[in-house]
Image 1 (cartoon, rainbow, N blue to C red):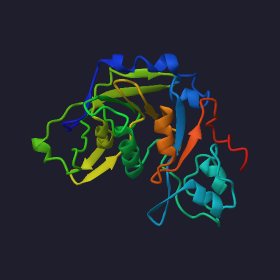
Image 2: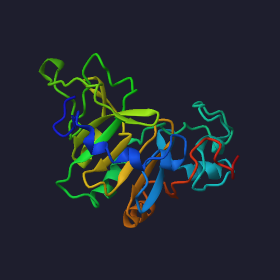
Image 3: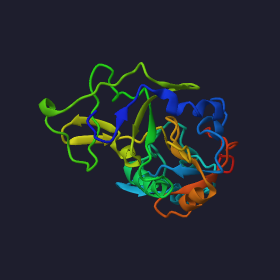
Image 4: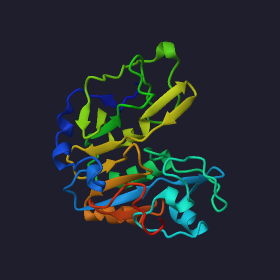
Length: 260
């Protein structure tokens, strides 16, 4: 990786608080994001139509469905849970990104989180160990803070991913990185010197654990836990499509009973 802000760590103690507060895998929201926060929010990953982001509520309106906190995108468009080529007379756009909060939405989220994070505070980023771009046999390059391409391969300082150091949670293992809050935007792959493929972290939180963000690899949404004030600010942010969430909310594809 080549980044001044993001480094992998083999000291996993910063993540020790998660497992005792996490529910069993498949137990709903509590199985994705730890308990103990004052309030929770669900951020919906935008769909896409003609290269423009589209909110689920707009898709629901077009498809004659109901927008509500537990809606599932595939139920809105009448497709199977993991069908990505939507064949609908009402909706012809693409499905949202699965397990990945796209950069514009992630940047908006970070903008809000920054107001609830001490400037000098370190943050921790968990990245699922199963992504193909985390190459065990070679280096992974991370973007610079200003988004400029990395230097030529001969001049780069590479750090290979250490797959022996992983945070183990129910059914998931994560590599752990540390850095400033804005380093969440640095994660991804450089297939070529001019082409960066960003990817949001799957889990991240600050040193004081005042909030936590979780993006499960199989879902089309991101969950945030934090203070009531933080969650209210997210709910009011026009840059994001956000709904109130609760630990007991179901997350499976068949949990949208209003549109099922």
